[in-house]
Amino acid sequence: MARAASRKVLESPRPDGGHLVKPERLQVVLEAIRDAGERGITKERLVRKLGGLALRTVDRAVRILEDQGARFGKARAGRPAVIHFTLEKGPDWDSKITPHARMALEVALMALEGTATELWYDQLEGLRTLADSHLSTRDRDLFRALQAHVCVRGGADDQQALDTKMLTQVLLALGHPEGPRELELTYKAASTGRTSARGSSWSSVVVPFTLTHDVFSGGAFLLAWDPTRQEPRHFRLARIEAAKALPKRGLIPDKRPLEQARELQIGGWYSATVPFKIQVRVGGTNWPQALLDAPPALPGVTVRKEKGGTVLLTFQATELSGPTRFILQFGADADVIEPKSLRAHLAKTLKAMAAKYR
Image (tube, rainbow, N blue to C red; front, side, top):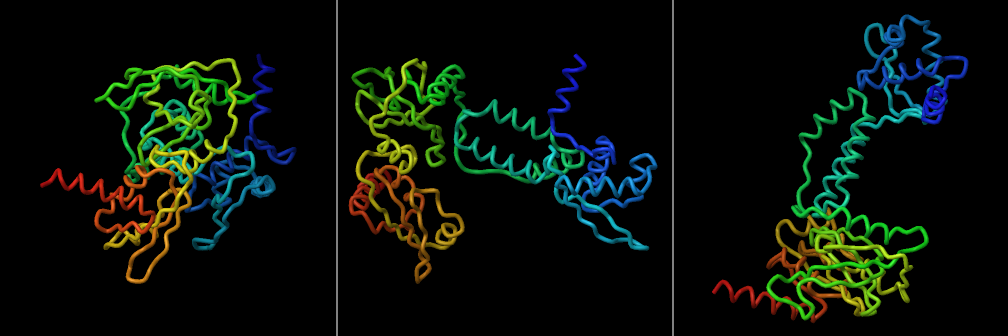
């Protein structure tokens, strides 16, 4: 048992001071400088932290840490002026993370949760716990202080938890080392007001291709090849009632339609038709600058500033519903330049909307 524990320690990242400074003391020096924060710490204080060792031992420890990838700030302060060490970068073996990195992780996780899916919920919680365990005491306090002042808005809040067994089968079929396996699934139709010829739920065997998180529609989708229809299909994960990974390898005769569906879908909408270019002129008080500051994540998007304060928004699509949903948010500040089919579709939609408010 002792040998196994010893092997485990040796396999993990650890300092190595050779015969000059014990690894444990290197760790103490590093943690003392880290915990000192922006104020820094002097050699004399480091000596006291190390239990009264000689200054030359501290000097050796700092040099060894620098040889191992650490970078220290060395600023003179006080009267008389003495060097204060601050940690700018940990050594190569250091497993601690900064509070800023932890905050970046938290914001990313909050944004991912805003795609209206609990797809990665357990994994996210585990990652949070792992990251927290790699914060120093001081940095953990700093992160918690920052956390109270950061929020993410937008996306959607999906209260429907995904079936863990279903999700496991989807991932097994999608991530097979030798290529995706066929996936048998039972799917619930989107419409609750109508019943299709096959009923509100139906079963099919498909070949999974990509998991897509779509912020425009607030959901996670499985993009798959339907061998029966010979076309790509999008399945919202929350509507998959059951799934089973089959042993047979899935065959996709041509991946190009799937790649097009993955790259050009907007809000879960796509079509196998030839992609077309959309140009929208956007004006108003705030929209132009907002689009220049943060261009929307649309396929092939460009935002060009025009004279008169407007911007020309250009992107690609294969279907009209997704772009319509996006453009309607601008209200009267948007003017679709092309294609004519989208102008006609928007005119029809707005006419139907206006009829409801007469």
